[in-house]
Length: 191
View (cartoon, rainbow, N blue to C red):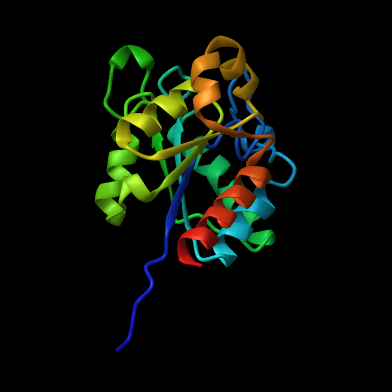
């Protein structure tokens, strides 16, 4: 009898988790700069058999800071640099809408995560979502994911503004530390 092992999925936020965030938005490929260790962490996930997906709010499109073509160029740079580290992302799901549009895909609503679940047949209850902000944690919880918080980006703000939530969520210095934790947990669940 042959057993087919289903590759697990993991979902990452982009700004503040993979790359440095900016209050002025990441408006060009030149402004997209990876956080040290983040690209290697994604490659580590890939080598461990994870399928990596990204879920990111990109309201800078609706706000007129950059257009969809520029966003594509930013993501192409990300994918090129990630490939140079031996990693890849299955797909980047993004919400281009303005917060006032009250769409279902803008985190903290779980729409992007539901899109991922539908397209890839992902069991969100068995899936980690790594983010750096309160809206990431809210979206993960609303979708039934396992939220993890990194202190890069807005993680310190979450600790200051939502101490109860912070105390209830596993937190890590950066994506590399969070990935180490996920891989240890994966080993426990399959070992």
